Structure formats: structure tokens, C-alpha cells
Image 1 (cartoon, rainbow, N blue to C red):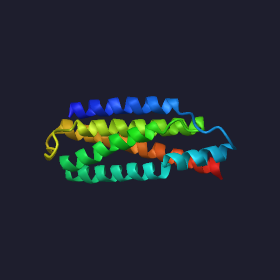
Image 2 (cartoon, rainbow, N blue to C red; image 1 turned 135 degrees about the horizontal axis):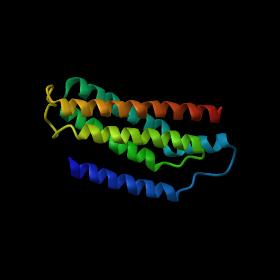
Image 3 (spheres, helix red, strand yellow; image 1 turned 135 degrees about the vertical axis):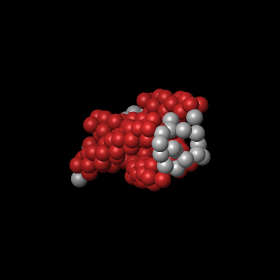
Image 4 (cartoon, rainbow, N blue to C red; image 1 turned 45 degrees about the vertical axis):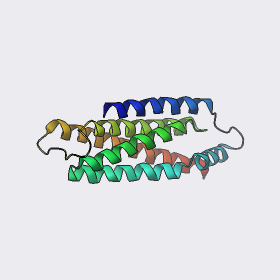
Length: 159
């Protein structure tokens, strides 16, 4: 509920604060720095986790199953927070792409968790809940698009 969202917001602030204290590696070429950063923070794993969270959201939304949605969206909040904690990157454009992506996933997770109490089915006749799920889906799609842009940026740098 609201307490969980507040805890996650506090965790995100702490993670962002820790990330601000850790400057990216400044040695080597831009390609070497980005490659080292990506491997060091586990960007491929984070991307895979967030994609899995988004897929689980799609299943929960199709079934209007609040328990599945709560699990997926809690994972989205956690994984987006951990991704944000890995910023900044050695490349400002990559940092901006990832920041937008993580922010969108986090907002999507929050909207999703606002759809109702855990463990109950979302009412098909509840326009407010369905509207929030639609908004969450749009944010999650925005997060996915941002990740695709970030991954393309990484590929263009490390070639």
C-alpha cells in the first residue's frame, strides 16, 4: 500500500544518494569506460529483470489478477530503484536515457500498486483501476523504449 510506496521512495532516494557519491571510472577510451561500467553494474542483468517484470505485469493485467500485478509491480519498483542506483554512467547521454527509463518503470510500478489491495482481483467494472493500469502500462512501455535506446547507445559506443 501507501507505506510500501513510501519505503520504496525512501530506498530510491538513498540509492540515488549513494550513486551520486560514486563517480564512473574515468580511465581508458569512452568505449572501455562504458563497457567496464556496464559489466560492473550488471546492466544486462538489470535489463533482463526489468523486462521480466514488464512481462509479468502484462500477464497480471490480462488476467486482472491483483496478486500477480502486485508481485510484478513491486519487482518493477525494486529493480528500477537498483538500476537508478547504478547511475551515473561514463556517458551523459546514456545516463539520461537510463534515468528516464528507470523513472518511467518506477512510476508504472507505483500506478500499478495503486490499483487496489493485494491478493484480490481488479474489478473489470472498476474504471479507476483499469485507467491506472492503462497509465501504468504506458509508463512501463516508456521504460522499455528508454532501455532499448540505452542499449543502442551502449552498442554504438562500445563497437
